[in-house]
Amino acid sequence: MREILGERRTNGNGKGHGHGLALRGAALVYARQWGWPVLPGVGTDADGTCGCPRANCVVPGAHPVDPGLLAATTDARMVQWWWTARPSAPIVLATGGRAPCALSLPAVAAAGALAELERRAVPTGPVVAAPTRWMLLVEPYGLPELGELLGALDRVPSSLRFHGPGGYVPLPPSRTGSGGVGWAREPEPTEGRVPLPRAADLIDALVEAGLNAPEPGGRLAH
Image (cartoon, rainbow, N blue to C red; front, side, top):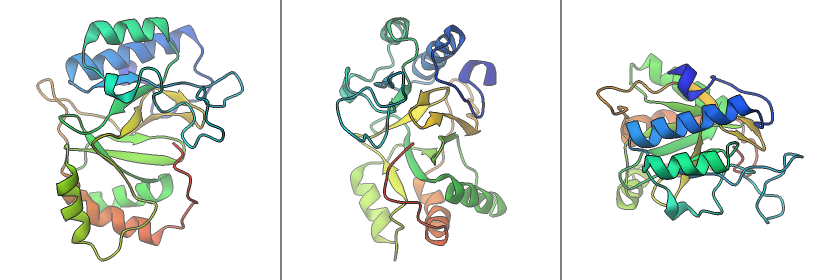
């Protein structure tokens, strides 16, 4: 799995031929084997700034522009074509619908939440480790379900983000303007699918960790 999906943490500018092959191979695994809809992120310029026209982009390189998010697909031929044409493009997962969703916290708070979930013997699924934020992949949820979940909470830290319908997260072994994306906890596929936890089973620990950790600022950087 690690040879296909990349290192736990990565460094560099993502321009090498070997890294391009790793990106294409990983994107094909996500789409063809696991049924996760993906598309290429915009990527970064040579100086590490986002390739999109927005000044001071908060997620440099790690978001889609052309094609847009609605183009995300599980079609292996399309994925193969994208990453042959753009071999260094980050891999973006379009969350929601039938695809995984995610809950994310700043890296330090997320690590604390994972430790607490382990202490409680609550199983977690894959965890994407970007330089500043970690994203816990969960079963798909809809906006009504999310509203009901949040309505039951007394407080929600501003650092806790929800990546549901219409959202996206970068996947390993992408490299963005903030650095490399890897796995804090790797997927463990079973019979062609990756088991995912419910957001409701993780939310208490994430909220607690987010409230107890220092707020790193308002930027939604990956």
